[in-house]
Image: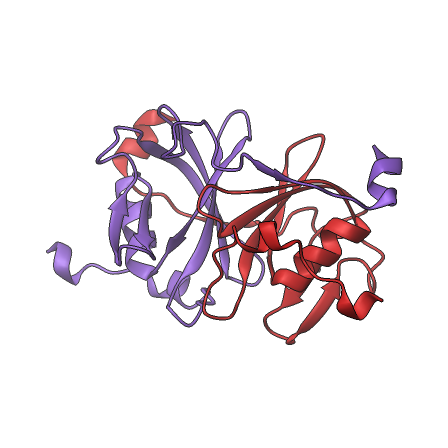
Length: 124
Length: 124
């Protein structure tokens, strides 16, 4: 049965995939709004995410599906999913168990880059 | 002078670009944390963003650089930029003037998709 299930065709028709058939998935903690990570989905990963409530991605490096937390225990319970205006990005609101990042930090975005513009300094 | 400037080589070395030379850029409002949009950057777009304080992207559909707000007036003043753990995504914290979306909505993520899993309903 699972083998013949697929992403709703109306939703599939709204996706704008890259050359590898992927869209970007931004993940935030549903209640605090904190941005946790970015991962990638193809149609099947999105279908599994919507129908299981467990965030499921396509690993570009490993070339396989990846249910977040299956190895680490750091599960993402999916609260809601929104597609953006041009269909190439998703925003997942999740309840993240433990750290989102494989390095052990809450969020993956920890490498601050220098903004050197004077205007940025002035606007702070 | 501008022609010979380029992205800091230490930063460039930490980027993991897709086949088109791009990384994903998640954009949030710096004070509320609201996720506004997702766009794409190559090295030059990131360099311009860091050094001008104005969010600058690569348009995949138009094949050109795009300074957010140059046409619409809906400028993004860049407060900070962080790279993620595997170097394929950036998180920009900006002060967004007006709506971020070209459709006139504050955020681009307005197309809610149905999460049909029983577990999602139970977790609400």
